[in-house]
Image (tube, rainbow, N blue to C red; front, side, top):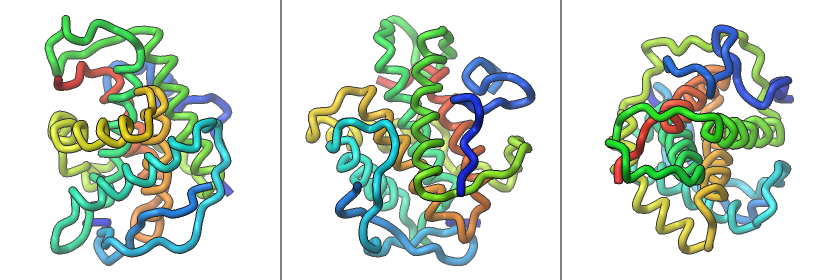
Length: 228
């Protein structure tokens, strides 16, 4: 199983009546892209024209970085069949959450990687980055209409958080350095990539499920001490 939006009234998703980030249980001028194949698989393909960019992104270099983030995910996750949709979406959202957490200015070196970390500043940053996913989906005319945010077992990503960070952290850091972005700006750039992947997978993966995958991944990454 491979690879008009109604913006939520709150700036964050509510799961079972709890803010996703409070729930501790849990214009681009040139783009890169992919073709959707059967069985929820992405196959790399040259993208059509350009996207108009719509959200609260002030630095155009964030959009350039986002395009490179998307291509990096596709390139590194690609197999003979393509790229597993849920894994690609989750990878982008987890890196967005990782950058958001690091941008909070907390003394990460004092904590053991993989352990939970909580705090109001984390919730605030996470909600802002998730709002960028929402705004980007709105600009892409992706319509979300489900109130069920349970993630079906069949839609579980194929990689764990630590695996995603091990694979993508270094190349993503190189991209944000290339464009002179802060980690907060990088988080929002990765959020744009997350939405783009949801939109491009829509012919093989319900965007409501894609969005749920993204939220689960982002919350997990925001609430977990990252690897070095």
